[in-house]
Length: 194
Image (cartoon, rainbow, N blue to C red; front, side, top):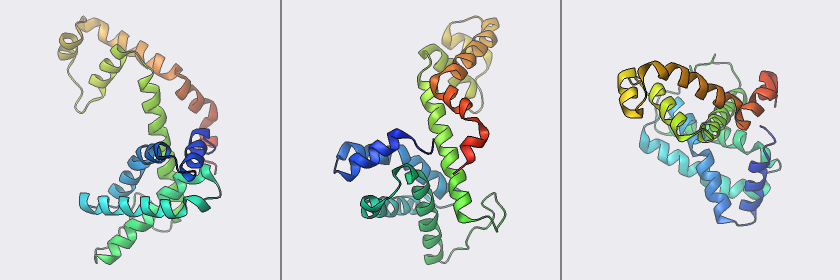
């Protein structure tokens, strides 16, 4: 994941002035910026401000970015620093838990956030590879709270007794998608190495 050729290609094209590549970078990593901001407990207007600052800094630093594949980590770290800068500037108390011990290095938190974001993107890609019927079934089962079986039966026009077996088949198909197969082949150690 760290040497994702898609990221390298997007960074290279964005450096060369390709607006579509820039737009795709922003679309791809806006959820990462948002999640870091939410973990810092920022309000929506502050999240918007931090997001603007991060994208502006990226415009400034993109030509000098030595490792294009390191862009997700750069974005996570820059977002976290911008959050802390905003918190200090507005005299708020700086968050300390971050679901981590206070002495955890900033880089470790950023890497964890990048990995979480990359896994979510892989799962979204894998989910999009499923049939529409599997997407609908799993979507109904995964919503919060999950839809009751009688509602799923009515909406998908299937017998209640077939929901469990269909769910099992859809999850098997999801695990077998190329995106999740690559993630599983990498193994847990490969995903945490930098």
